[in-house]
Image 1 (cartoon, rainbow, N blue to C red):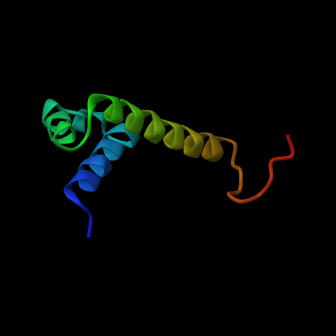
Image 2: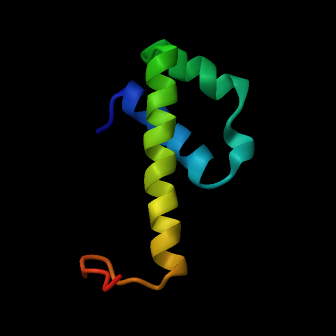
Length: 70
């Protein structure tokens, strides 16, 4: 269903969003098989942005899809 590149990106996302101990040298070796260093950094920044937004929404108890009155 997913390509090997997509699977490695999902593992990277899980390491950033959840258990950071999974961000091992082995994971980065796998990522480097599919992505350049620049792409790995860019992917990490994008993942972190969405994880951060999700956490902010949860902390502020906002309803997804509704406008914020601020």
